[in-house]
Amino acid sequence: MLQYGPFFQFDILINNIHFIFFPLLRFRHLLTKEFLQFIKITRTYTPCHH
Image (tube, rainbow, N blue to C red; front, side, top):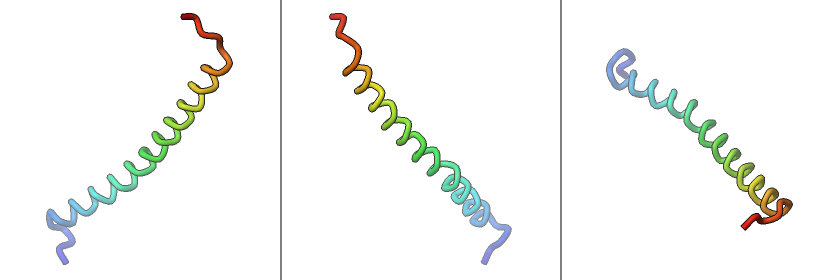
């Protein structure tokens, strides 16, 4: 096992990306859902100005 080789560094990088990226992805998904819900609500309750 190469603990201080480039593969070890790469492994750390991948782990960091995993820990940072996945919560962000989940958070963005939640934001998108909330945003779509908000758009639905505003479209329903505000009269059209066309």
